[in-house]
Length: 293
Length: 343
Image (cartoon, rainbow over all chains, first blue to last red; front, side, top):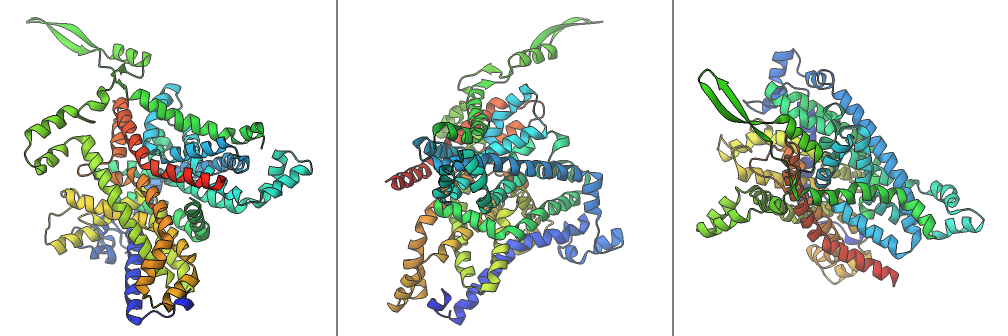
């Protein structure tokens, strides 16, 4: 396309470059700054004198003897047992991803192959369900869950997140399965397979690109959730994001904000790794949803 | 596909959605019609050296018993909806009749929790959506001019604000806008006002929350528009150039019309999602200056001893109504698409 349009005039090129540079700084600098600051003491990162202290780390040098310190991480991970929250996050997000994919693949495949009117209505219902604010659903769960005595434990949260995730998963996998030619599984059935055998032997081997993309978004939903996990988990079972929120209340009074900064950085790292390795799938997933509507 | 096979395949997904999305909505509607039991009071006679007096005391046992028996509370009809914490009809009527000037009406309405939350939610929704889309479009045009090798890293950096956990993203910005953080301190120097802070200034809180919204929503529009740009027909662009269209005219008359359908899609989805704004309020500890409908529900639910399920449910029902209104255009669009395919 660039060749067709030709070269940009130098002035425009400079302006574009400058604006892009500003955007890249706006997008990346907060993360870089917080990562850098997480190795300082509070008097530097939240300096009353000048933010320049956060760069030089003068107070960190005075308090700990070095310009970088791991105190924040030590406090969060060991003293305040952030590792427990990290472990819970691993359990919750992995379970949510695998269960939603299992349930969603079956459903998405059926929706793509049915062609009946009711399949369309299920999709419409899913669209409505997807739009529901999570916190309003949570206010519907609390009372019944208290009564049934299943509030506060990990399995309840996992199942709730799987259900909340289903509408999106169904839509995404449905449109993905529409792209796999019908002839493929139908010819297998002509050869004597049942529908389920056809699904297992013909469709499963070719469905991985779509499933991986959908899985990434299920993972993100489970990982990023705050509304459900903060309200449905007891204090001991909290995952990382609600744990950080619960840190804030107790920590600020004790003057240990750096614990929260360190745990925020810790919780961000897996997301960066995810984007690093799966950038292409994330982008294609977002566009597929948009282009197909 | 036979109905029976279809039912078997779809069963787990449908059951999950019915149990944990449809049923809770019903439960919310029911709960919104009830309020918590009042505490059972008993008269106790206290006899001391100076005679006896009767006192009213809370009978904890009886209260607990009645709560166990009927956990929903007592039936209240629509009072949850019209009390001071929600639609506040009485208060609104009074404000209308006794205030002079729009300014006074506004400031008095902002003392009513529901209207305060509604105002911020709507402002956030209708400011963030268009600005985030414009930002996304501009980044897409810019990144599209970069050399091939630079595009990958450019996209990587650009989607970070969208991928980040909302609560964590808002905390990171909150710490930077803290009066002792880099941006907050710089703002104080630039404006020459040493007392300027998020806590003290509602205006600044609103602006920063909206900036956060644009920062975190822009990348979604960017990704969609960037993909759309790759499908702009080269022939049309070329012929526009031969006809003497300037660079700006090519954007205005070729690229924007080509991306228009995508833009409506993005706008509809983003409006719906921004209406649910919640985590930034918690992350920025903004509740004194700005609240949202979702935050009101959360706030009713986190009360340690007295969770106000009825009140939370009433706000939830009204939030759901708002979402449904925003959803109608999406549904109409999907309906049309489906019928077009069927023909």
